[in-house]
Length: 136
Image (tube, rainbow, N blue to C red; front, side, top):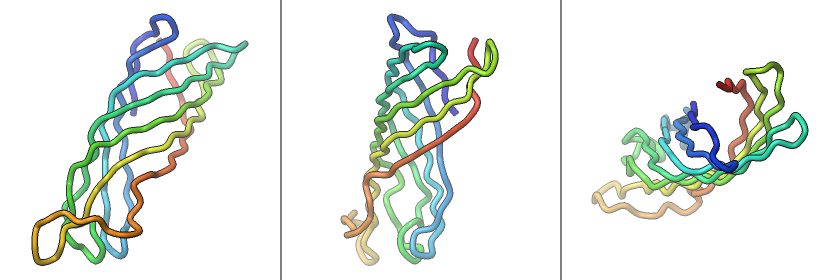
């Protein structure tokens, strides 16, 4: 879900919230992200192309680590991406977008509570989406 204010000189402020559900070596993961930032877009014919950069916070459930191990529940997160809107009526468009998401969640040691880096745990994630855009 995202909300953007009307553009000023092709630049607009955007708020975005998203999440996903998955597993990490048998443990359930439910991360969600709340971000804000800028979006720059231009109209080419009927199409609207944009690029955006957002930053904010990522959160995840406590027992997301391998086998249900305890992990950090908050992280700085950022995205860099863009997309294309194709109008289907005066107020609606189909959007195709993609971005690169950075988040740095660390798993805690089983004996101590000190966060440690887990080899092989990714910090960068690709994300692709399609959907319907409502324009005021």
